[in-house]
Amino acid sequence: MKKISNETKLSIIKYLNDGLSIRKVSELTKVSKSTVERISKDIRHQLPNQILGRPTKLSRRQKLFCISKITKGGRDNAVQVTNDLKSELNTNVSPSTVCRALKDAGLGSMEKPKKPLLSRKNIKDRLEFAKTHQHWTIKDWSKVIWSDETKINRFTSDGRVWCWIRDGEQLKSRHAKLTVKHGGGNIKVWSCITFKGVGWLTKIDNILDKELYQNILKDELMETIKEYDFNQENIWFQHDNDPKHTAHSIREWLSNQKFKVMKWPAQSPDLNPIENMWAILKRRLNQYERPPNRMLELFDQVAETWYNITSEECQKVIETMPQRCQEVIKAKGGWTHY
Image (cartoon, rainbow, N blue to C red; front, side, top):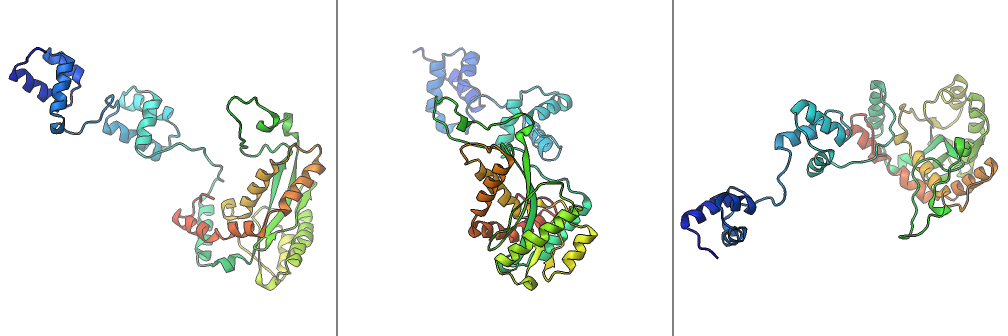
């Protein structure tokens, strides 16, 4: 190995201290890379901590720009931010570079959940509801009967469906989410949940108008109250603000009952625990080996699955009401994660 002068060695050390790579130092000093590497090892404990790997393509200012575009600028993805970098800062990088910068800042991608559009009045009403009920205990919430309608597709096209498959295994019918043209049909059902279990379920054959809804309340709701031996004077009934729910004839009938009707904020499915039970129902319908041949068979499967939901499962979602109210208050009337 050719001996180098002290002056050259000092230059190598200076360049290494400045953060230059071994290759670059070798080019500048005309010394072999092996010699520069040996000197680097000898003085490693003296060198400042360095970030190994390729230098970052984005400066700190540019990274803050990317973060701001996502958190405050209304941008949804890295491609949009990449375009902003080019148009506003004249910076050309790939979307993957922006993705790395966002991940390093603690941001992560997610599928956008479906949430209802909230007006100022919606937000105000939701916040008022949450503050009014923020001190309700589990015992208080256990006195509420939660109701709703839902649509169930014959081929379970609602939401994602997952399955397990071995590596290299051929795709089989159980691995696929079966679909047909026009969805294969669907049914609509109404039911409710209580702290003691699920309520009576009914299929809605025609358009749900105020007359049919009143019949459902007289039959399925009242049978649910009777089955669980509720004292009507101690319970609350919850339904949303659908026009057929708030029709004059419905309000008049409800006013003549012994139970109380909860004042419900519009656009608030995230505050209704029955939405979680509908999700459980639809997931469990995927467990059937084959889709139903007819709508009547679909309802039979729905009813069987619904009535197998336990009281403990109902209690688990109802017991989240205090947390839901606190989340609404924290969000100042905005959405919760439920």
